[in-house]
Image (tube, rainbow, N blue to C red; front, side):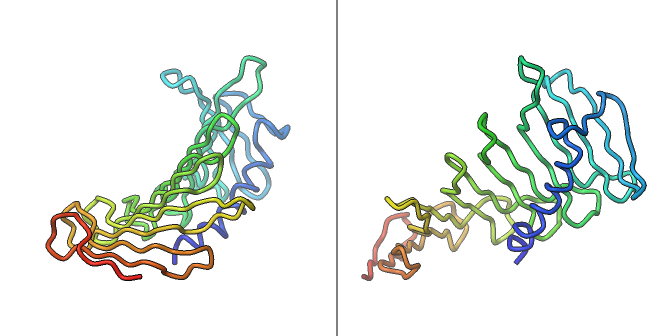
Length: 202
């Protein structure tokens, strides 16, 4: 599944970008562009309307950035990464959008899993931990599957429950409750389409 590839490839791309990030000693002046022998280019632009610095990283030198970082300049002159966009398949379109909080932790991530230009998968994070996932399986532009995670006393995060809108009417039809091992412990179903659980199996 694409998400697996995203998890595997994104750290690699991010690591490459970090080698030239402003905070790692590879800063470029805003409005400038630099290249290295491999053909990679890095350019920076000031976004006055947002008060951010946009850093574009083009690994293969084809004029299309594979990674775009958005930095906020702190009062001490250092930079805080607040957003990131990644083109996973290098087709010129953004496939992963990541928003970070003030501590540099992921707050939200939008993923286009089939490279069609639509972000059908969204992960929501709390304190850098994924707590909610929602995704669109029928292509109508609205999420119809929802996953909710919990963090136990030992710090382990696991899927707590899953909800699905099977007929795309905007109401949940199927509920599943999980234990810490991933086993389903309760299943519920709405049979008459009123949004309420009519059947519960434990």
